[in-house]
Length: 124
Image 1 (cartoon, rainbow, N blue to C red):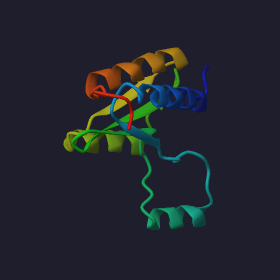
Image 2 (image 1 turned 120 degrees about the horizontal axis):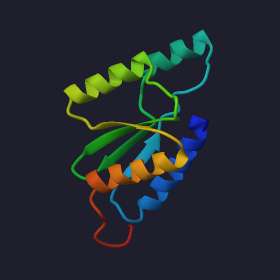
Image 3 (image 1 turned 90 degrees about the vertical axis):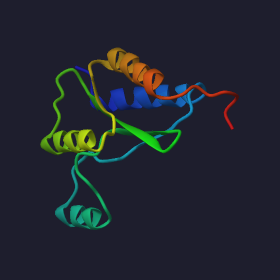
């Protein structure tokens, strides 16, 4: 079974490459891992939200979409399910991409191709 971190790294590399073709920017919110209770309290005061998707992709006209990555056996947590429901009510595209690295790369590329415009000229 593929580790989710390997899928995230591969998909980030793909998004970096696709950025030469499509007009968008993306980022990952470091929301995984164990933290002390005191640090979680600080993060929450700073705006931390459980369930934030793995990638946030911004494209022209202020549009965004979310991509949550899961390995073959991965499941959404309750906070991720809530984020998905709230995204639907806000009409913000939310995608759950699940599988091995190859399957996830194909699906992420399809999402970008179907939602994000191509660049008209060279980057910058």
